[in-house]
Image 1 (tube, rainbow, N blue to C red):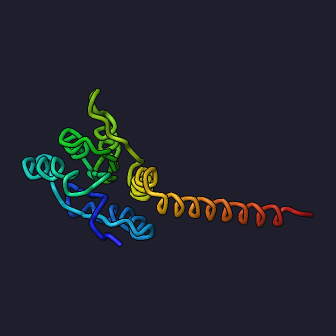
Image 2: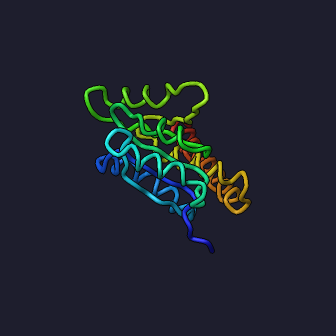
Image 3: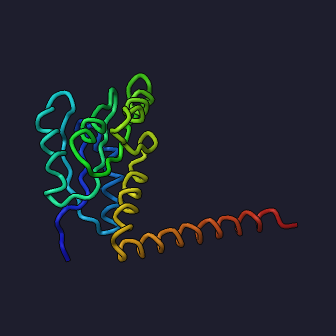
Amino acid sequence: MDTSPIVGIVMGSESDLRVVEGAASVLHDFEIPFEIRVLSAHRTPDETARWASTARERGLKVLIAAAGGAAHLAGVVAAHTTLPVLGLPVGGGTLYGLDALLATVQMPSGVPVGTVAINGAKNAALLAVQIIGGEDEDVARKLAVQKSDMMDKVAAMNARVQKHFER
């Protein structure tokens, strides 16, 4: 089994790790190897551009960019790669992440960034898994099992609620 990373996760600050750990957990569950870096769109712009522009040649297939505040990281990453970039706005600060969400979702035409909810790390990782599953049948099968498990859990919850209200 190849353990070379195929998903790249970048966060603007070490403080974003508390959110990003949710993405790492999902990728571990799906046995998707990933790399993770702390880079800044503003404080390390050259290194960020280098990381993004060399991602494909390093074997990465999807990039997740997590940032709070001004949250320009996903856009800068997307400007330097042709890989899919998933923006993960990190909540916090005065606006509780709304500023990060708006900064991440408001990309100019020609620089797309798929954006998930504030602190939506698990969904960012699941989107990465789904993108990879488009080419990888093993990953697609694991996704099908995960979705089936979710349906079973909801059906069980429904049965408990229905039983609760039986007369």
